[in-house]
Length: 218
Image (cartoon, rainbow, N blue to C red):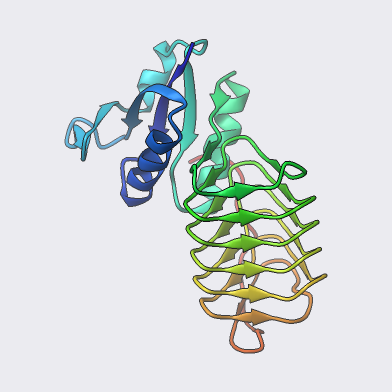
């Protein structure tokens, strides 16, 4: 029996997630949860069923949840809270994506159209693999990572939690990238990157320090 899917966050990313979920065809019904309800009651064809309070009465046996919030830290905090409350996370893979049978994709992750994940790669929990990105063989991608459209990650790259890659960024093979890193659009990473920095350019250079990612929901 197919379960129902509730998507937290009725925004632009949420609509893309709903389309991917509908294309995958794994859920009976798809709806949204958004704290702006009832100001917003639908997103395109999909109904917004209520605020987060609706989760208090949600039937966990027939419902899966996907957090469609773009900010990595906020998304992962929501996921941690849902897991503590016993909810089942959805994993959405668009049917045009290719995931090697020798790779794994964590719960709560979204893999959008024409993504390629090659052999022996581990994708963490609550990630976004956006349209057309390529992840090479034997990579280790942490939790709450966002790989933007058209980014290319070569083989044997390790990426820490909460890291964000801009559109068209590239990483050469065997690079270690830390936690909570921002890699700018079009950046080419050719050396290891520590935690909590912003990197831009060709080749990529550190231009700023970032605060450590905060834990928990406000």
